Length: 378
Image (cartoon, rainbow, N blue to C red):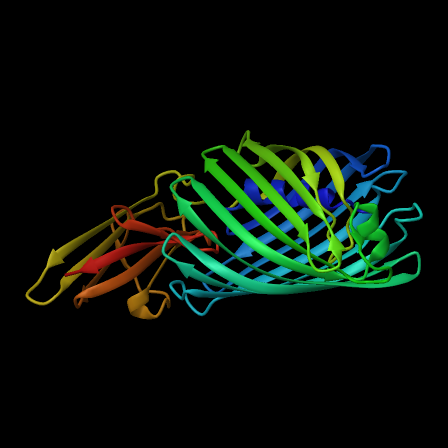
């Protein structure tokens, strides 16, 4: 059966290694050791591929991975997700995702699962909140079961550290999965209901990314459960293309995706086939912003020093985030625009890379792997 940790280990490695890439194509290969409750530990080779793309309105992700083993760890999974917002500074972000998997070969491992989720995020300064729901259908040994969940949470970013907290309520009739995880109903035949509280931290600086997640689970109503799980991972980028990810810990059973309670240790190597250029990596690129006060408002001048081989794009809130016409100057590009008093957002990108804040402007990060610069006209 696919262990929840198999998917999470891959996704943690992918996310940590490529969170800032607006377009990325990566391959992953590694080893995994998983042990389900009251079962022997098993080894597997894990292979995966990930595609990620971001722009002003859409962020999309597609991944496929497989764990190759002769036991219940063997599995294959496909995940797709899409997020949308009307503009760069729009505070609402809508997400939808779907996954499909095939399980392994033991008595608890034959079958598959299809699940999906909807989520609405509200971006607030350096953080935000979200609410959503998920539903899944599992077929295991020709026995069908259903799982559903509602969740809400929030996150806050302070420098290189991001903290996240969430709560979720899950309902399911998947008796074999839950009882294999040590969760039992007070009455035979009763459905299961559990509450999860999760706390996560993410730290990223230069080549290093660290992640940790603590989950506390308690039963509701006729469900007896009191469990906890902790999972941590670290990713080191040797180069912009090659990364090593290490992780381990415990994952609780997920009835929405039909994955079991498991303890896991994993190590994998990521190779990025496509790494877009950005301002810090593209040699000879620099941006400058300055304000010249006028009788009413100010004139904003944005200057980009870049080689002729680099494609430069600029957008701003005063243009409704539509592309701005830049004037060619010696060694780069320039934009001059008169602005009335108010708050404005400005962003620039190179060769289709991540949207960035021009130099000397305060940075405002978004949830799509990019950022914009804040301009305040007194």
